[in-house]
Length: 70
Image (cartoon, rainbow, N blue to C red; front, side, top):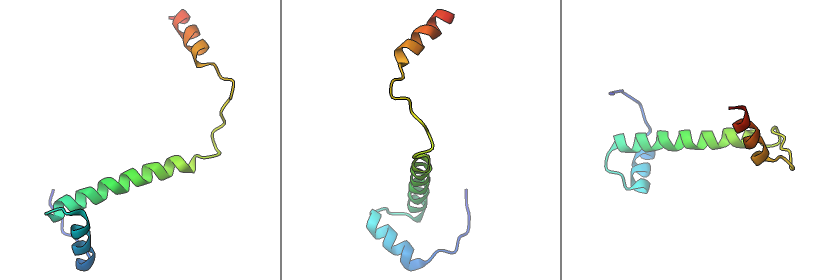
């Protein structure tokens, strides 16, 4: 997909040097991948303290009852 963007040239040059990538396309794809990965992690960290875990939960017993029902 082609798109026209106005990007800070000095930032673009520095990013290309830091990553050792050869094309702007590779750089933009890498930047987008890293942004998505970073935001997914952040969203997981935002759940900290919002999910309650039961310390004595027996997942094996739950599996056994599920198989009996089948």
